[in-house]
Amino acid sequence: MADIHVEEFYKDAAIALAQLYSAFPRRIDLFVEDIAGPDETDEFGLHSKRHMACFGALLWLAEEGFLRYVDTIRQDALDQAVLSRDAFIRLSSPAPESLLESLMGPEGAPKTPLPPSLQEDLSSYIHLVRTALKSGHSVRIGHIVRATLFSARPNH
Image 1 (cartoon, rainbow, N blue to C red):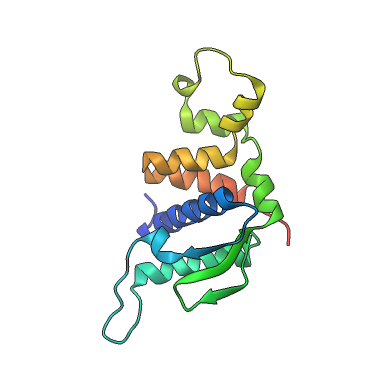
Image 2 (cartoon, helix red, strand yellow):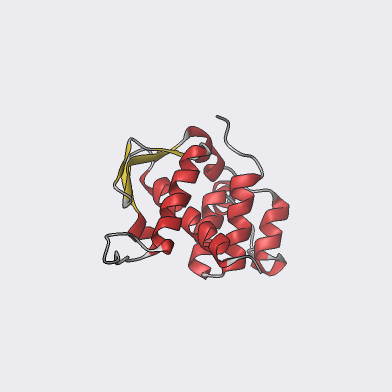
């Protein structure tokens, strides 16, 4: 089992990528609270460790070339964020058959053949990310996020 902060990173990254993909090519404000949930600052106005970890995950995605943004809104959001070209291409691309089988298993395959365009949509990385998020299963989310982010990183 992974450390809880790593599992949270995978979930935060998956949610952020799904939000940005749904808005692409529009720029959006990417709010930490929409990803990690509500946060109450302490008596000094400091955010929780969970909030800051999510904010850190968003900054890391930007530093690694998965998204771009114009500015930060304090430590609450990324202003005018958009997927990078490489991240959009990656999320739109079909995942390797081995990844599909490891995530869905042979029982997850449809009984009747699907049209090629639908088959491609259902095998894309973004579809797998969304499906993993809907499942709420942290191991599945981690598996697809690792495959999406680390098997073919965007170029800088």
